[in-house]
Each structure stands twice: as C-alpha cells, then as structure tokens.
Image (cartoon, rainbow, N blue to C red):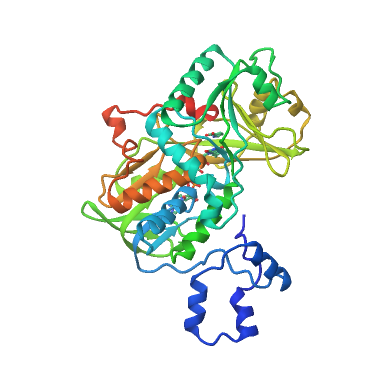
Length: 447
Ligand code: FAD
Ligand code: PYC
C-alpha cells in the first residue's frame, strides 16, 4: 500500500512558480489546509498534467509533547484521533505507528460491514458504525467505496435457524433492519448457490440488506488525510517500546524516535494489545491468533451480495475487480505470524465448495493473514485502564473492520469526557465481574 494521492510534487510548488505566492506565511496557511477532492479538482489537475496533487497526509517528526497520543494507525486508532478532533476539538494529537498506516488488520480484512449482533450494547455500537459508513465518503471527502450490497448469514442447521430467528427478533427491537429469509429467497439473491447441499442444505438466512463492504485501505487513508488536515501528526515507522508513568498516571511513551510526553494515551493496537498492556504493568484478557483470507483470479460479476456460511466456516464476496474474496476460521493456536498457510486454503475451500460448486474451478491468487485480538465473550474492550489517563480499545477480534467509525466515536468520547454511552458496557473489568457480552454467534464464521 502506498499513500494515495502523493502523485508528484506538492501542488504549492506549481502555484509558487506559476503565480508567485510570496511568503512563508501564506505557504504554511495553504499547506495546513488540504484542498478538497472534487470533480472540479480532477478537471483542474487533468488540465495541468496532474502536477498539483498534494500529499494525502504529512509525515512530520514527532514533537516533544501532545495533549493526546494514539498508539496504532489502524482504522480504530485513526478514527479515534479523527473524532477527538472533530467532535471534541482536541487536535494536538499524535498517532504513532510502528509500521505503515493501515498495514495491520485494517489493510488485511475482507471488508464485511454488518450490525446484526444479538446483545443491545453490541447492536448499538455496530449500528452506529454502519450508519457512519453510509456518509463516510462525504464526511471525510474521500471515496471509501461503501457498498451496501447486503450481507446474509446462511442457516444450515436447525440450531442456526433458531439462533438467527432470535437475532432477527432482537434486531427488530434494537432498530436494526434484518430479517430471516427462506431458501428460495436466498437462491434469488445468490443464483450461484447450491441450496441442496449434500451435507448442509441451505435452510434460510439472516439477511441484512444495508450491510455490505467498503474499500478497507481507503478507510484508513481517508481518516489519515482528515487527521493530518486538522493538524495532527501521523508518525509512521515509530514503534512504542515503553509506557512512562508517574505513579499511577501515564506521562508519555518511549519510542524508536525517542521519548514523547502526553496528557492522555489511547492504545489501539489490536493483536499487540497484550504487549502494550504488559509495558504499562497490567494484564488483558486477550489472546492473539492469526486469521487468514485469500482471493481468486478475477472473474465476471456473479455474486452481488456477501454470503457467510458459519457452520462450515467459510464466507465469500466478490470484489469490484472481480476476485472472489474468501475466508474461513481463525487458526487453531495462538501466534503472531501475519502469514497464510496451505492447510487454510484447503480447509476453507473444501468447506465452501459444496455450497458454491463453481469455486472448485477457480485459481486462487493471493493469501494472507492478520493477528486478531480475541476476548472470551467475542466482544471488544473500550475502557479506562488501571493506569490513569491511559485508555484501551481492543478485542475486536475477527470483526472490527465494520466497527471502525463507531469504535473511534466511542473511544474519542471516552478519552475526552471520561465516559461514553456507546462504550459503557465494554470495560476491561467486565470479565472479572461476570458481565459478559456474549457474541459468539454473531462473531460468526471466523470464530
Ligand atoms: P490494526 O489495523 O491491526 O492496527 C493496529 C496497529 O497498531 C497496526 O498498524 C500495528 O502496526 C500498530 N502497532 C502495534 N504495536 C505497536 C507499537 N508497539 N507501536 C506502534 N504501533 C503499534 N472485520 C470485519 O468487520 N469484517 C471482516 O470481513 C473482517 N475480515 C477479516 C479478515 C482477516 C483475514 C483479518 C485478519 C481480520 C478481519 N476482520 C474483519 C477484523 C478486522 O480487520 C480488525 O478487527 C480491525 O481491522 C482491527 O483494526 P485496528 O485498527 O484495531 O487494528
Ligand atoms: O465480522 O463479518 C465479520 C467477518 C467476516 C469475516 C471475518 N469477519
């Protein structure tokens, strides 16, 4: 992945030469406010051979101190920073990333967006996120290619029918639009499906018509550009190696670019959450495990909804390029390897091929893995920590892409105000108190 939009020289160079913009003051003013992407901008740049696009975000050296530091430039970290600025006016913010932004799970997932969860706190935050996705491109002035094409979870056992009918009733009470549909309706929506599978016939499905997909790295890039535009510093290649405390209170972090002070620290590092908690001196109920996915060669459009088959551990959608995007269950052992493995292709494709016989003829092109952070109840943690002014957002496991805007909204509110209605139930202490938010059914295929 590369910085989209960093095509050639900074547009101001062209302006200085062409129009003679006179002094550093006006230069900085222009540099600090990026120009909007629009049809007019494309026409203008087309007329001058695209020499004027500016970088999508700046890459500054870190300052000595910030009001808030966010660790992790994945979708959740960037969204947290964005809503800190947009909703709470906190803009003296650094986002520190050990690799490149969006290079973690945010750039590795299969982009499914849905809010068909069972428990009220989950439905609230996932539906908030789904609704924010609807207007994200306009809000960020960045095309995230949100495609509300519809998501279905197949019921292939009697047990699943009961589970999904229950979810549909719960969703009706929560104001989330889902319905349980018949096998015939499934076939109408997905003509390539075999509903008479020999072992697992399709008995119905939980259908969310406003679920769908979005371009995952565009989500990271769009938030990054908007954060940079607000004056925030995104520091890539900057690994946090220590959390500095004064007694019980956080005062900063040690990094590979030196120490940086802060008033508040938000840790949003997904599969590395346990490592960061360890640096701060507490433990988290998180396990890290690889989740893999793969894509086929591109083929003509053949499926315009997302299908998840949770009993057999497989799911599939078709990308805009025509590739079939396929994934299955998480690896059966804890690890930190962001890699694919052959047994996974075999298991996942074998699981799906009865329901989608045509995929047996596809060549698979690419395969990869990401480290997901799993909690025992398959729900996230958005929480204060034992360290004052240090907050943690993690545990999204195999399903956090869909949650990015809602999670960022809630985490920003928690950091700014000390509480957030969307985050209240998701504390790290719920495990000790027995207040689980069990989403093992909704977490679905990948668990
Ligand atoms: P990440 O994007 O992983 O960001 C965390 C960042 O923290 C990383 O960039 C990392 O480099 C950085 N970091 C770590 N340690 C440090 C440190 N010490 N210092 C500085 N930076 C650090 N979810 C869905 O909703 N739908 C799906 O279809 C879906 N499919 C998936 C398929 C796969 C194969 C995988 C792996 C995941 C999938 N997910 C899906 C889950 C989803 O991708 C994650 O829940 C989500 O992306 C997590 O985002 P994040 O911002 O928390 O983490
Ligand atoms: O949470 O919808 C999801 C999902 C699908 C595949 C991986 N996660």
